[in-house]
Image: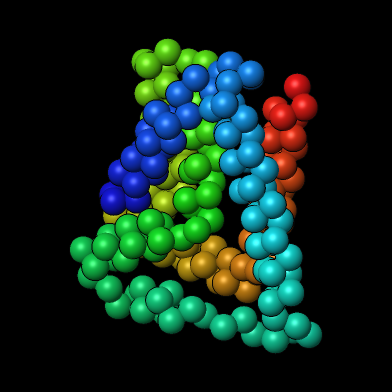
Amino acid sequence: MGWVAGLAAVSVIVVVVLGGANDPDSGSATAADWLKIGIGALFVLMAARQWRTRPKGGAEPATPSWMASLDRLTPLKALGLGAALSGANPKNLALTLAAAASIAQAGLDATDTAIAIAVFVAIGSVTVGGAVLAYLVAHDRAVGPLATIKGFMLANNNVIMMVLLLVLGAKLLGDGAAGLSG
């Protein structure tokens, strides 16, 4: 659950730093817009890298060494690895920064800001938490579908990440540019 705390902590820090970003004429709003543009540009560059490094001509994609060891980890070690990987993942950090900047610009009171951060963290955690919960609750029924999903995602990782990064990058670039021009 370290990744959940990390999402929440980064979100709170950015919202506090960018306080007052709901006023479009404020320095905080401009900083939030430039943050979105920077992260959007970074995502577009990362999408291009994913496309360039994809396996060519039916080549089998290499399984990352950390992923190959997952089946042999104890639950506690898997939790630690998950927290480390999510906290060290630049895509997660960038997406969290962008989401927190949007929350800061929304002009919410403290309670609504806390609710927005909680909803963001919950939605950001549901895919991982749901898979873990399914595995723990219905292990025998979950193993097959989870293995199928794992195989698909391994085989198509570069393309999945490229599309995701490109869409998020375009969205953030648009939001940032609209904020600066409006």
